[in-house]
Amino acid sequence: MIDINATLVAQIINFLILVALLTKIAYKPIMTALEERRAGIEKSLLEADRERSLAEKLKQESENQILEARIQARTIINEAIALGEKSRESIINKANEENGRLLKATQEEIEHCYQQAMLKLKAEVAIMAVAAAEKIIEKNLDVETNTLLVQNFIKNLNKEKYGELA
Image (cartoon, rainbow, N blue to C red; front, top):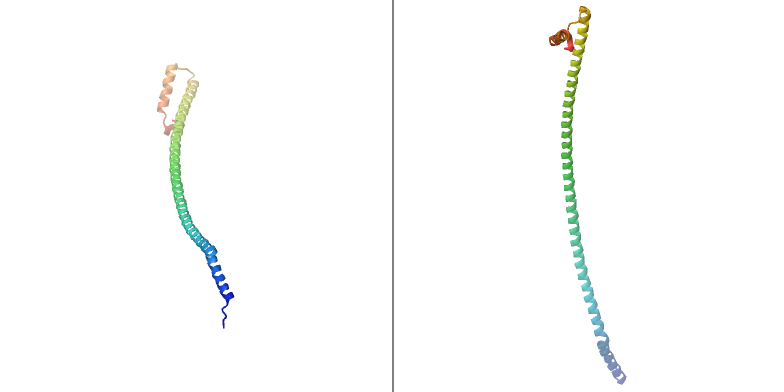
């Protein structure tokens, strides 16, 4: 059986004093440190969750801004393309108008030069006709009569009789 003697009682008392001392000196500070650590870890986890949700929100806002920027860029590109098409059409229309104007001016110039050439040719033909007539008649009429004869000759010229000269 168990012998209860003074040593056993002293050991039990020493053990109880040790447990009391350890509870007062070590257990409460260890438990307080463990509680503080648990609270710190909990606080860190909450802050990490909050920062993660904030990062997710910022990421979403960034993606929305990028999407809006792409839409704006596409709109600007489409407007630039439309403006380019309008400019191209305007330039083509102006070029066509200028081409028509130049063509008309050139045709008028050609017609004017043609008329002048015909007048010179008619005058030369008339001079040659007078010269030939003078040789044939061998008699020179006065200047007024010569001029009248040439003018009548030119008036009576027609294309059927003398071709393109008339």
